[in-house]
Image: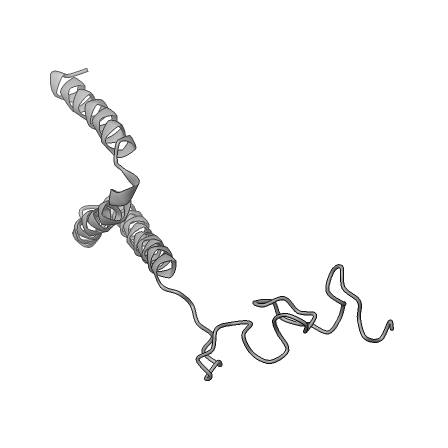
Length: 141
């Protein structure tokens, strides 16, 4: 082996080790920005792979360039989908969901037929299929 091959192998292994150490120590709060940064790096990889695929050095470089373009594109698209999903999870936790069909503005379970004496606890919905637990239905009397 030549000295350049050994040096390149050493740099590759060292980069892999340092990358693993850095990624495992990233706090969860920084995962989304980190994912966005890696998407940008993968987009640069797509451009480089397109240059290699279109250079027509030989058939092998063209095929490997095509595979690199396909792989980097899948990585970019998947990264953006995951980032979008993570951002939606953070947004969903901060806002209260309301019923878009409710035009009364009343709180859930506060309408007629709910609350004390109705057989349906406040906040619960009455399905009509079974009487409330521990209560009696009017048909059984």
